[in-house]
Image (tube, rainbow, N blue to C red; front, top):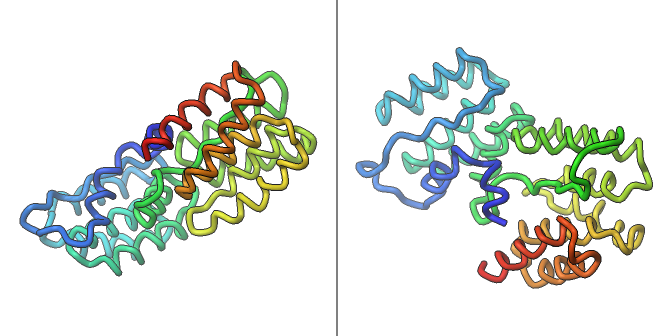
Length: 256
């Protein structure tokens, strides 16, 4: 499970781990890592790099000024949060990460900020895993587009693609599950579960429903129930690609 999600969050995990420790001696702490974010402008990225290069003297101050100048940049606020946390200012760090989520939710930096606020959970968003291997229909192409957005850490764009697929195909289990998974928020996981749970009754034999229920339960660290759902997913089609992934998650959850 961790390996699946870590692919999406690569580049910032080390910094987030350091930043969420309760105490890190200043003289042992390296500068916050620069976490690449393609949604940021070249000018903003360079300004952030310049601020980080001044570590530890003046980095947080420069990032605060940069945040004021760029009210819609999640990258600046995420890096500011790292700098503040590594300086021992945990409360302001959390506030900066909250600001990053609000300022630019459809960005890798917002996803990483959410990770920093929830270090106990696997990094990244729970991925939707299609039942199909290649997209042939309009619905499958929409779902595939959402998966691409997820892998690029663009959750809002992914959710839009999944919602569009669900509207086109209201009786398609994959589309309905994707729309539910796209709602997952570590602050409000009930949003996704309230949409995904009823699909068990609506699609009682759909492997994708059980698989993704198990996946989301892992994010909540509810491992016993997750294993039950994943076992049910395997039973619905032991030789399918989803069953193979379910077995991988089962093995990983037993080691958690």
